[in-house]
Length: 314
Image 1 (cartoon, rainbow, N blue to C red):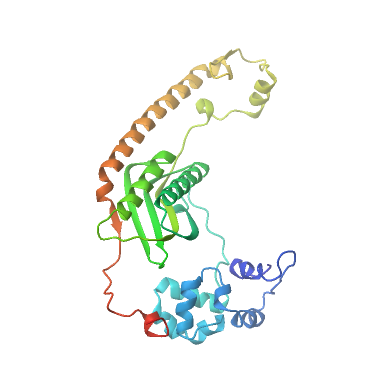
Image 2: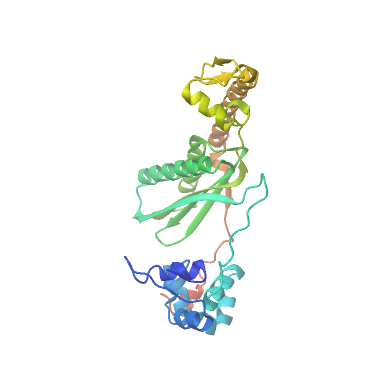
């Protein structure tokens, strides 16, 4: 899909699959004509549940979002309403995200979700939670980040969503710690006396409270290109004498102390990390029954929802 915005290009990418292209010119009239005839379900971010709610209030196409904009504002949160109205006007996602300042983290969280046929097999769900948590940990390592908080998301077959979270004393990117925390949250929720989870269709794990995981480069200093080439060839520059470290690196004598200091710092960091990991796992195990619950207000089940009141099942 080729279009003035990323959102429009994403919509167009589904039109001429698998090998064709769809191009929408940067013309307001052409954009609105195309969008307003489009079913709302074709827009990224509008799922089955949101589509059903919109249809209950007569909103079927993107053009209806603008026509019924008063109802859209009344029905949804400010964020959702703004998103839907931006869609109806064909705007949004034109600007590239600003590059964060040096040392700051650009994203607030990193997570993974997986949807599957509704199941009551808790062994399968625990395996899935572990896999997702380990994938999140790999993502943290790839982006050189650590997290202070783990959030587990559970969506039941009835589309009811529950989120639970736990925070650590220290930020971490260790897969074992994240997986154990996620499992503890999941088990605490499924074993809760007042929580009857019978079938689940989606599980997710999110890491938040992100921090940079800055580590020194090998040797503690930046290595010059010519020095790397010399070491790859197994020879020395003419201006130095070398020694071979126990790690196999060929190091100039003038860099010996810096290199050995780096090994000492790495070993110290490893021991501290192991101690912190053990402490976190112990804390998670002891706090399993008292994890922080991220939950909304109690719902009066005798009251009809908006969807039930306007066209849904009674």
